[in-house]
Image 1 (spheres, rainbow, N blue to C red):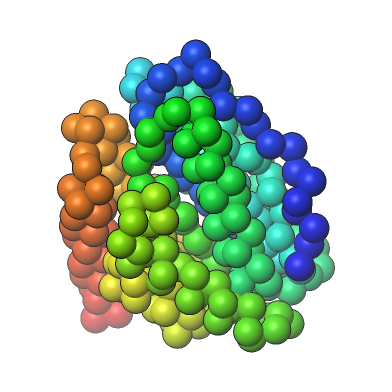
Image 2 (tube, helix red, strand yellow; image 1 turned 90 degrees about the horizontal axis):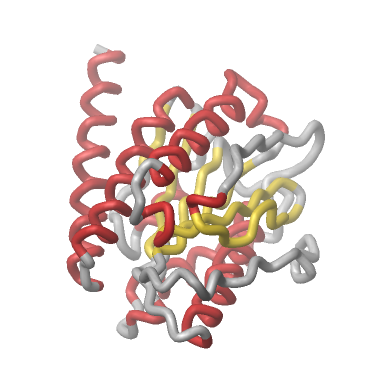
Length: 251
């Protein structure tokens, strides 16, 4: 595992009393992400997501975004930052490397844990955190026990009885090299099914689903169960749409 422990942590803005909604992206930057414009489309979708949150006076203060990437290890590109203060992102895929997906997920979960502890120390409340995992492949050259640990931790966090321990994970794949098995296991605890695209140009539509879900939680002040229900319904609606489009293209 890469040593991400010494990344630069972003302090919490004590002048902002908004209830926070932390969103962390755990992104595959292995060499295959160069294929078919995937890394380009990922950047476009991510920046569109940030812009949409920034367009609303409440979400740009309440939503906080962090970015972890993985290839032959994990790297924290951006610790949690208020959406309104986020600069446009440019994420690059590696020229050489593996796919340490489990390592990346465990890193992201640790960053979420650290941020939530800071919220509590600062007397701030927060909505359930989002973990968005995106890959175009499967764990490669990584000890299988690490991915299994990541799956176990994700599912435990999805089903936790104490709200402070809950993390909502969104497993997303793209391309024909994705191993459905791993993404399905990541979805088992909460959403039930992953979303897998044939084409990375579809990222933007899905990111809009997530950003709008964030906006609803913040504007409606959803409690834990309301947030879970809203997120799951939005995900299932999008899943149906994806399957319908894929059926049309193969018929």
